[in-house]
Length: 289
Image 1 (cartoon, rainbow, N blue to C red):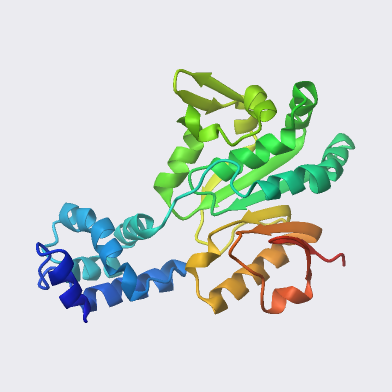
Image 2 (cartoon, one colour; image 1 turned 180 degrees about the vertical axis):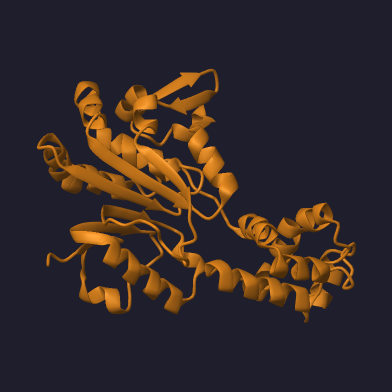
């Protein structure tokens, strides 16, 4: 069955003159070339539902006209890519990562900060900020006085994503109170402020994060290296060559002995394996020079 047949069967209101196989293939090619996202045929209706509002807003009568528009118009292409990205995440997702960070990684970083050193973290594909704030709250810990002292030292976290609407929510640092139920009570009590059914991340935590729009497949303007990189449940949307090259680039951006955390269904393969040691489920460490 072709995409046209599928459209006719499942969405009678969608005419092949509005959206067809060629339109889907063109959009899939643009998404892959631009940000590495793979859109198999089974995603045809998802593409339609997410882009149809943009097609209408642009004044284009058909998806084919909209395809021409996004090929020629970089801001509109960015809007389309943002609409196609999946931003599903939640606080304290894959809790074993934060537990490992707290027990095996954090103590050395705290000691370094107290000696006057610096620590740099990167949440790559931070989406709407839940991972960013979970990591920073874990870093500050459940001792408020000690956490406040850590927050005054040279600790910074880069939080990046391609989706500007997700970054806006992350910067806002406000969530439904129920969204933070998975965060350990000790961290939530100290590092958040709840009013009614809304919870805001505490200012001491917010001031440690720097949010930036970044395409992981594009140029990376950051000059220095990172001590820890979290990139979780992002590479599941990429093909294998893209994944391998991305992990290789992450490894280059890690200091010797630095840590890489990836998603539960992701694995490191390719050239980066020569420089990374497996330290736990989806936890890797760059070998010392």
